[in-house]
Image (cartoon, rainbow, N blue to C red; front, side, top):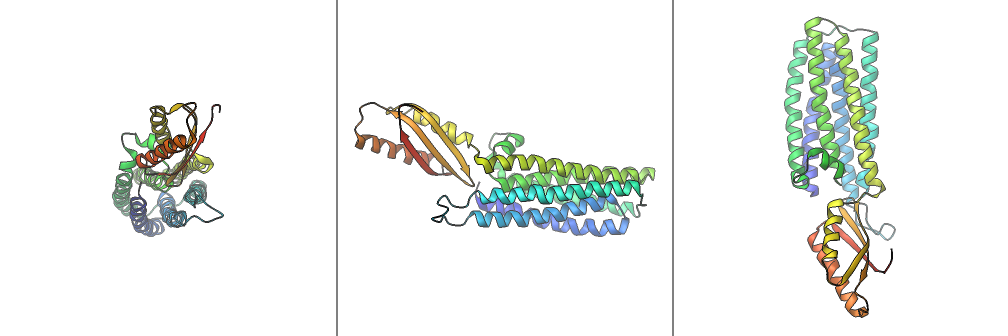
Length: 300
């Protein structure tokens, strides 16, 4: 996925969340709604998310150095992890705590009708932000389901944006339902429960995103690229068998290592020519492949 698409999705999300956060905050102080306050904290946290993601993408684009010869591509994973566990979880824990406080010490919700109107506007803006994020990942997603893409993607910044947009949309629906129940019944316990449910939703999203980014940090296989390269190598007349093959995500790039047995009694110059041709073809077929390390052996 080109960085420009990710940056566009992040900027759209930031603009939408900033406007929504300010509206929610004003409405929360005006109405005294715990659900709205939880949603305002969530939206401000989302704005912080986008700033951190942009910083991470900028740092990930730095040129390779002697000390870091493979560049800084994985740095985007680190900043995405910070988003997941710092902002998502802090926002989630705050919302659960706020819900408990409002349940233990009930506060009347004033002007709930105004709050409902603001939440409906926020739903529209969040839907727009989510739609832009989904458009940005469409090419990378291909035929895969959204969940399958989430489990396999290397684009941690898009993973976070889509995750937070989905969480925001679900959170708004929860806030609308609970605020509506409070308006109909006059029981503020529903509003307090809404705040707690939004917090639990955020914590759940943080755990899911944190788990996937953790896998990327450890060095996750680019399965589609690996499988394609495996088939390509096995189709080559000079390759007897592929002993080992890695295709590891490194930010927006992939490192490929191959250990293969070639045709016996090949001259060194012929083996070098064949290997160079295969490496060139691999890079030509897969734009994300930056490095290919090929080793000849007869045992793994």
